[in-house]
Amino acid sequence: MPSVRTSTTLHPLGLALLTGCGDGSQSALAPAGRDAEQIATLFWVMVVGAGVVWLLVMASAVYAVVRGEQEHSEKLARRYIVGGGIVFPTVTLTVLLVGGLRILPGLLDLGPDEPAVEVDAEQFWWRARYRHGDDWVEVANELHLPVGHRTALAVRSPDVVHSFWVPALAGKVDAIPGRTTHLALEPTREGTFRGSCAEYCGQSHALMALHVVADAPEDFEAWLAHQAEPAVAPEGELAARGAELFLEHGCGACHTVRGTAADGVLGPDLTHVGGRAHLAGVLENEPEAFVRFIRDPEAVKPAARMPAFDTLSDAELRALGHYLDGLR
Ligand code: CUA
Image (tube, rainbow, N blue to C red):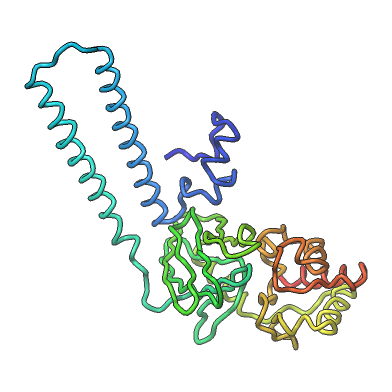
């Protein structure tokens, strides 16, 4: 399939509709995973199949109009009814059904028995824990996966139903309170793919985005090893002031920065937050984005659980943003 992203003949609106968000990074029609490829193929088979059936029906309708009330021979009429009304639909639906069922075992292959990643759908962000030797390493909103490997994910939710969906990689799976659901992802090419929550879960449902970065296996191992390390020490006066403010204002009650006194578990782990491409899944990651979010989380993500810190001065917010951005 030609990449929709690079086509210049499509009207921009058509392109946006086809790819879901414009650049193809969240498009089931620009697959970058084994499962998504099978789903996309099934989609195109269904589209072509439905198109052919539509053309045949339209041709029959035109034929019927053109023939007017001329009589058909009874033999010909019976052929139309038996052929077009019974044989053709039976054969067509059987072929489509068998084609659809054939890809099921591949989609249901959950990979290794032990999930390598646990994903918790929170209000309104994604907590992910990676198995790293005997330990677990926690990150948020940005997952990395090795290309060419099938990674097993266990998906959970502490409160309401969400749905984990990265369209370019695979189908979706619900996060259901009190249960663990399973999914496997197998990227086939490197890149960053956007995912979103696919089950209405509250005010910021549409902002509950995540990104999956598909890395070469050695890059993935390096990334995971780096995530397992404690946070870097703040560099420079401004960052050091930010680190002080972070602890003084109680940020550590909800957030963990490994290697410091901050060990809260309610909010995202911020040990390497500055190294992620996005903040809160929806902002470009830069010091100014931290300032915006800390001052008024509600303005970025309505009903987010984090309280506003609008009593902090601009200088204090800038120091905090600088410190957090430096946590690469
Ligand atoms: Cu979480 Cu919708």
